[in-house]
Image (cartoon, rainbow, N blue to C red; front, side, top):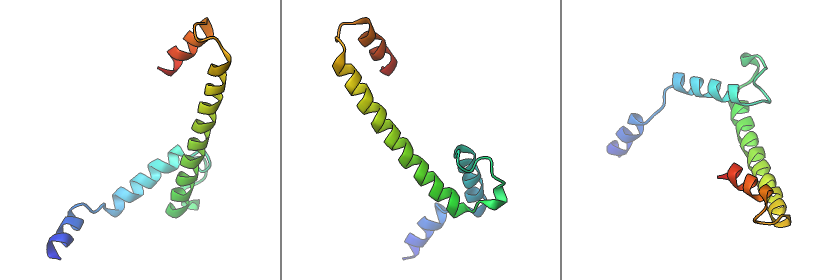
Length: 89
């Protein structure tokens, strides 16, 4: 048990590091970026981060579907298809 405890304490993150990471996340989130920092708790930042990641996943899925539909409607040898291929490579 003591070896497990020492491994955990060696990989523990300090409170200051957590505060810094939460602050960095806060800056990346459009929903809370412009609010005063003291008005948004760390748990709210983490919740909003999860929500934002989910919304980004949905957006990627939607864009992928739209791209697939677009590619299925154009000639594979057309200039439009070449442009799309160059953008996604």
